[in-house]
Image 1 (cartoon, rainbow, N blue to C red):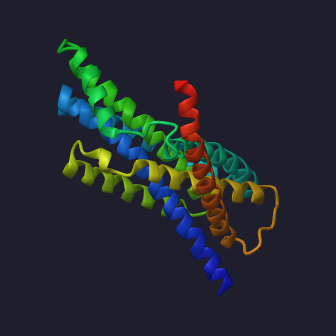
Image 2 (image 1 turned 60 degrees about the vertical axis):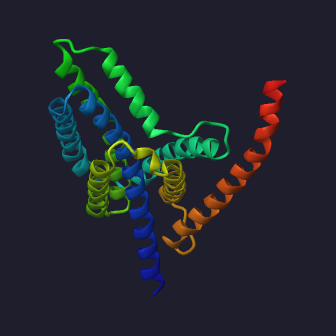
Image 3 (image 1 turned 45 degrees about the horizontal axis):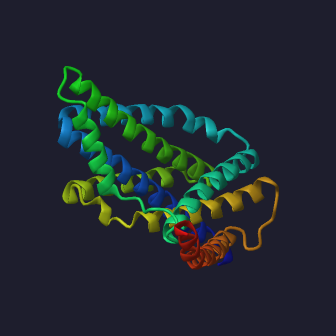
Length: 255
């Protein structure tokens, strides 16, 4: 019974981390593709998107199987460190935005900036090439973070297939929703999603770094849930503290 609970807890955390991380990255990629498509033409936007997906698939095919042969302790130690770095970066930005010390990520504003940037380039002979490069770069860079998330989380948990499936569902869902709502991407509670992803990544990073160092966690995978709870409390306290200090800092700047 305890073993089943531990396994199910680990699966829930894995699915949540992969889905939210992939959804956030794909919202950002979709914003760029929509801006390119509306401004420069859908054909080049789709070609750039397709090329980026092919390159990303090749990276998964090349490096995915190789990770399976890495000793699990060494893999989890490295992956744990990587996830802690990624998670802390996501959490830092999400905490600052939630506390009012940093402007929230506005996909509509990003969309308008991309449109203005593309329109400023004019309709030269390089129009298709510009659109292709913009779409490729946006999808590839955001997709690369999805690939890293899937490979690291999936391989370390010995559930690469599950992680890849969840990522595919997240990408498909964001794509469908994007087609339906078009430019209204600012309605997506992205900062809340990034906060959740940061907490999950840091929780996994702490757990796997400990396992890589041969730490025996009480309750095994159940400890993952405990880490999530601990970090939720810590993040909540940090946001509350920063919110209280924000007015003081603003008055000091005005003075």
